[in-house]
Image (cartoon, rainbow, N blue to C red; front, side, top):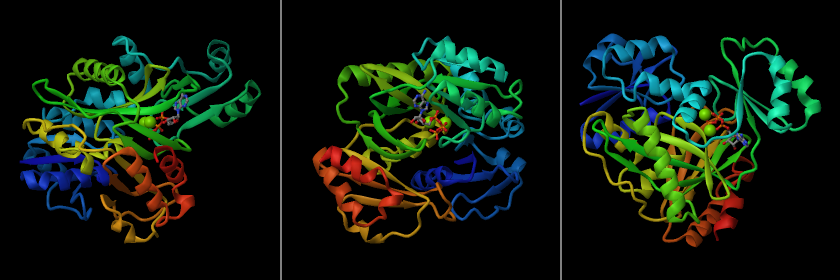
Length: 377
Ligand code: ATP
Ligand code: MG
Ligand code: MG
């Protein structure tokens, strides 16, 4: 079987690696040049995009910001999973909020803004602590502006001046003070079967995911159930096929949905070693019509992103239960270069292993590691 993935980054690479034992061949599309490439070497393959679409059993995406003309072409083949509509929900915060409202899923108080003059009314309605988000093309905290007091409004308006807000509106959200950030990764098959992984707790730094711990500590059955209900309503509501990630904020015992990712997700990388079936394998199983695999956690697991850093000792692999996943990209500031997965018998041991890891990696590149290690151990 063959699956064509739009996007040729690390997620396509990890799908390729998961597909190999199943005999599923994964090819990637470099969407900046419309070329079909090998997901690991990134070297061009001997097929045009049209030929690769024709030869594939399923088409899917590794990120939501695929040019619409490519999504339209893919959708016409009737092999695109999830659907173009679901991908656009993840790519466009206006559609995303509309879906959440339609399905009555709790989310952050917000306004959709199509001209800068409306920002004053947002302060009256939502308060003067706001996160202003471009509705398209944002990730890792890019395309966001934070307002922490009303007197910053003029400065922010200047920064936003020149954006065509009638074409690409802003989503203005109340800045929440939440307990923590959680995510639920789940998968829905073509015939509507659903399996979800345990909730992960995510630590962000400067708008970017640094560490995930799964199963998230201190999740009672009611909270896991609340997250699963949200997932089911979303996945069924979109007639979704494949892995879907739901990012949430925990406020007291309530979950508010922050955003959706219509694909495998960074906060699900722990499943590579922490679960019976990785998110990458389950995504491939779903889009090729195979039965879904078990999503339980084998033991507490942590995923630590390697961000903007290429030099650290590979001796970290001497820590038991430690695995390195290196993406082979050129080092750039704030770029996700790889990740480290850790598993341990219990949270305390996990914290201890994270503390051991601190010795092998430069502290400034892993600002959340020591803090999380401390919390767990
Ligand atoms: P991603 O890389 O996850 O796609 P993104 O750039 O799309 O990120 P968001 O997930 O919307 O952006 O926001 C990034 C981070 O900013 C969140 O994980 C959270 O830490 C913080 N954040 C976003 N919205 C809010 C909010 N309304 N209140 C408080 N913090 C927020
Ligand atoms: Mg996002
Ligand atoms: Mg996010």
